[in-house]
Image (cartoon, rainbow, N blue to C red; front, side):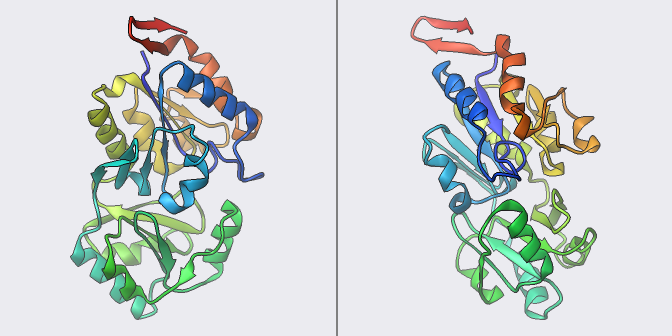
Length: 269
């Protein structure tokens, strides 16, 4: 039975067209929580850019920064910042003007500069452009993830400098870069340990290539209708697009897999 549900944000919970959660998904989330299922975000965003979702009161926690920082009931249960040597290599590339990078801490972010890819990425996600600051500012607090802004393949220039990092791309405008061996699946495993449940007791939803590991790790992996074929083939189930009630439809399809948790044990819903 499913006891925890994990939701990617952009293109999964939040529409790229409206930049909001469809009402059908909100209703489905309320029903999940009423059934005693833990609900969590799982995103490449940091805490600052998920606050509008956490403020709904519909989520018990969040896997942030592609799995490098996990919070449950307001407490940190896992963190995996970028190693100092890799961070210094990235800072050097940005300071030399060879890389346009975004640096993300737990609740803050900034970019080393602005190019057409930064502008396009922010417009696509409906987000304000991060502030511009000197790359060296990244030394002042843990950095869990970076964005490298550029066309596909531009991440190779950073990975050649910082051998302890890996990159995944869900946008044509940038790649998420984090410690090698990280990823949303690592965050899911950490949250499961904190909750005392098995991976087989989870369901996860996603649409991007950075969701593939999470979908494979979860007991049930659901790809959104707008996902690429590379994502869909790794999922257990493909639902409709976010704007066509994909979350609600999938949860209805798997409704027999959820339990109502109570003092007298569990019962199916």
